[in-house]
Image (cartoon, rainbow, N blue to C red; front, side, top):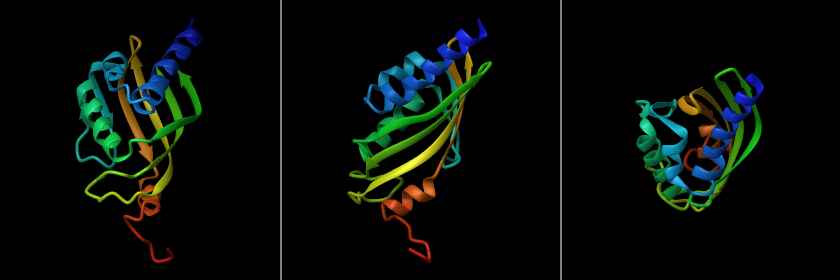
Length: 145
């Protein structure tokens, strides 16, 4: 039974990457996230709350990177926790984080830790290589660049 529930939990999280983000099916947010959902992101000053909050965040991101595709590289579950290692690839053709469009492609790895309850995602913690992505789109330069 536990293995079946863990498999269902992983499938719910996969929908975020495959349907909501990669296929731009933004209303999937209302199917996969609990009403009290919280998204923790070290780049944001405050957590994103609720399915609508996450939907709005992704819509803003998709405006900047409309061709984004995310590959799930690894995924496993333990009880109510799902860990997903992923890679995003896209082209920054719109304004992002105050950075004007560069037209440059990037590839960015990340990890998402998701806590599930009753088949819905209630909490996410995401960690990405934002510095690497910003270097690839030309938004910042390090001394050796």
